[in-house]
Image (tube, rainbow, N blue to C red; front, top):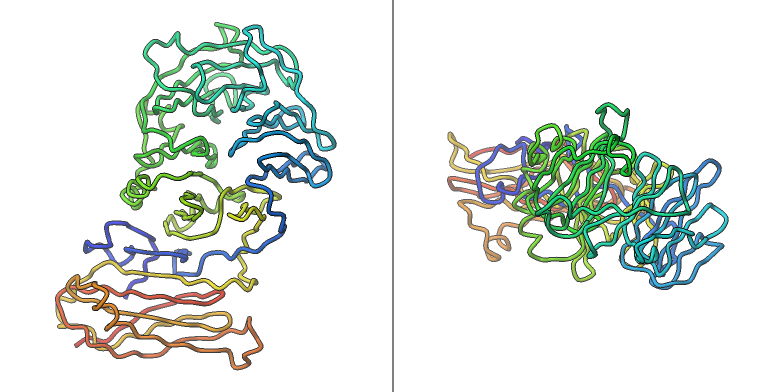
Length: 461
């Protein structure tokens, strides 16, 4: 039987889709040839006061800022204040500009300082909760505020800010959700497009280096996209920026090229329906790209429970997972997250941790034109430590609790030396079944610290 190396395809839950796709693929990832359990995670800092971490990596500095509701700290120095549930930051002039707290701060690796920005409009810079660096200038805005942004001088971490109103665009709606620089080449070198996204899904794209110079700042185009799923719904993917909307993923670079909404259709199609269903649950969404570009993570937290869609860029396959993550970040080329309890965890692709994972695979529904059913099946699974394997073969869309209870079979194996928790075990056992029907589905659960599904074969009636 073909393994679902092309990953999750939501419609395969009920439809007859190629066996290379799965109706459910939870806690598995595809390497293009087999299935392996998703990376493990382990606690690197048990401090539980933080809800977000900001890496600070400049020259010899390699630090991590921890943000809690009442303070920000680098582990040694702290600054008290009131901080929102999401803090925005931008790197400029070897400093980090931090907004979203009761004060607009800068951090240089050795001290937190209240930034000396000023405006001539009466707007208090401490009320800004969005910041980005574009062509070496800081840009600020207030989410939920007026449709305007403020920008500083080149390399500025203090000084006067100039207002740029967006209401001159006429019927633009909503408030600013985010501003992102795009790596394109349109006459001014790299990073010369500033994308301004509103909460209603409108994008205004500006070309140029200086908003104060009409000869060096012009509106390139305006596009209507789907409504972004919050202020964390953006991530850098290679030279592109992806945005997570209620309609799926949108490529901002392709939007510029096409002059209209550019869904990342070849990427997002298998999970579009699943995302739409989960949007109804609400919660907080985040879009994150791994430091090495190996995966894109869509994270959702609802009622203190986290759920992820994970796209592996090498195999181009989706799967889902349940890392207990409230916020993801990269540091030193590795992937970390702040867990639901506030501790910091790191992903371990090598599987050397003790975390036990239960991985689930539901095949698509399939037919056997020249057979009446499945008589036996043989999985080949390699695992570290103890392994528990459960499998059920369903027929003719009969998937009630009673059908499953009758169909499940369970096999458990241990290493030769039970004390060797990292010892390798192999399951290659033939299991009998009496699945007679017209259309079939295999459901499988594997529990281990790390496992690889190599193959699945069956004999027919």
